[in-house]
Image (cartoon, rainbow, N blue to C red):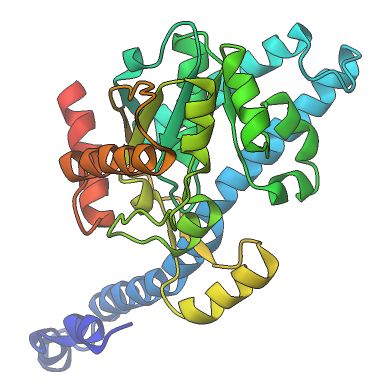
Length: 331
């Protein structure tokens, strides 16, 4: 707590003078009101870090584990074991899509612009900017399944399958760690894949400046060329304001990440900021374009979405105002 905040309580000394010179004598009622104000301010400064570092992030973690438990129970009830491509899982996927989409609408006022750019049939490769937690992508997957009847196959990090209780959930939601060949094969089957070229590195070491941290990765472009699938650029406004990573010790944490390839940077947040996903126009297959050129073209398309839709540097306060303002416009 800053000294100025404490000084605010005592900046008008007339209250003390009134207490000591009042004809009625010392007023415990007035003194108590000032003491209560001071105590409330002190307690707020104590609990705000606890709230932002533990309580809010835990809500998402609890929802993920609820999803995993629901999938487990559903599989046991209907005898679905091992065959994750079975249509028997469709109802479970629909229920989870409803839960996540409703949560996104309630907590973040989530909305999607350009959903029509995702084809109603045929293949597509969604390429997106990776926030500290890809909460926006959970919502987009749900919206796409509910409104376009398309199931997205996200490419995720291997550590997701090692989190206790998550493996079955990852399989049911078609999360994969596929190679270039396997991803291209899925696209040739007319399905949709999503990938963040920055991956876990961008998630941990990106910040409110929204710089793309792809480190010259072109694997996704090779997948698109091999499968001849269109690339669709995706970006979510204020995703770095919903959850953030700490800014200290980054050089040390980078060394840890390079060595262990695991998430090592602490995350805080869960703020109910406005989240709006913008889906850009497709970048269609061109046989004359190399993988490196296609990767650069895709990065430029996403950077354009960032420039057109994101406040730089990002501000949590402004993103909260966006949430309130958009709600007021709806009413």
